[in-house]
Amino acid sequence: MTTDFLVTHSGGFHADELLSSVILTKLFPEAKIVRSRAPEWITPGDNRIIYDVGGAYDADARIFDHHQRGAPLRDDGQPYSSFGLIWKQYGRDYLAASNVPAEHIDEIHESFDASFVLPIDLTDNGALAPSGPLAGLTLPALLETLKPVFDETDPEAETTSFHAALGIARAIVEARIGKSAAKRRAEALVQKAIEKAGEGRILELPMGMPYRPAVIKAGADHLLFVVHPRSETDWCLIGIRKAEEGFELRADLPAAWAGLTNGDLEAASGVKGASFCHNGRFIAAAKSREAALQMAEIAVREAVAAGL
Image 1 (tube, rainbow, N blue to C red):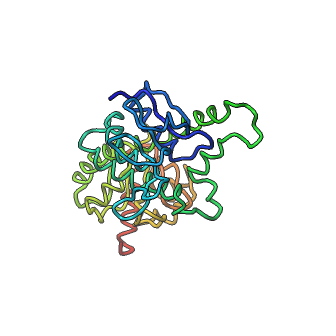
Image 2 (spheres, one colour):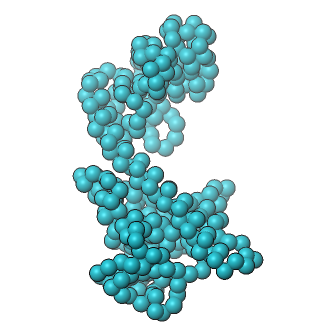
C-alpha cells in the first residue's frame, strides 16, 4: 500500500486537520496534500490517507473522519477530532521518526495525547469552549487567524494560507515533542544529582534543565533550592515550587536580599560574588559556583530556622 496523497477537505481550515497534516507529512514526506470534497478524492483507495472528510472512520481503509453519525469516541466517552484519530493511529510512528528513544515513546505518546491532542479534539467538537480574555489566544484560534479574509479574490489564497499555517503548526508540534523528550533526558541527570545530594537541601545540576518532575517522582521533599551554571561566571540559585500550578515556593530566598544587585547584595548577604536577587525572592545569581552555593547554604539555614 503506497501513500501518494494526503486528502483533507477544501475550504476553511481548522486546527485538527492542520495538526493531522503535521503528523502525516512527517511520515509520508513525498505524499501530496490534496484539499478536496470531490467524491473521487474522498473515497478510500490504496494510494491515500483521508482525514477530516469522507464521512467514515476506518483505520484499515485509512479514512479518519469524525463528523458522521456514530463518530468514534475515546474510552471515556470524549469525542475525537481527526487529529486524535490520526495521533492514535500514527502518533507512535511519528515519535519514532522524530528520534524519540523507544523506551520513551509510549509515555510521551500518552502525555501528548492528554495535554495537547485532547484539548484540540474537544475544542473542534464544541465540547470545550475557552472563554475570557485568553480565549482568542488558544492554538485553534490563532491558527484560524491565518485564514484568508472574506473578500480575498485570489483562487489560491486558501491553499497558500493552509500551507503557511501548516508550517507554524509543524514548528509548534515539533517543539512540544522536543521538550517532552528533553524532559525524559533531564530526568536521568536530575535523579543522579538527587542521589548525590543525599539528605542535603541543595540540588546542584550541571546545567539548567527541567528538574521538578524528577524531584517529585523521587519524593525528594527535603530539597529547597537548585543551583546550576548558566556560564562560567554566571550561576543561578532557584527556589523549588510547591506545586505545578502557582508560584509558592518550598522556601523563599532571604527577605534582606530582595531586589538587590552586586555590591548591595554582597553587603546584605556577606557573599563575595553575589550579583542579583529578584524582588520576588524566587531566583538569585552569583558570579561563581562557590558564591552560589554559599548563598544557597545561607538561604537553607534561614529556612530551617523558620521551621521549614
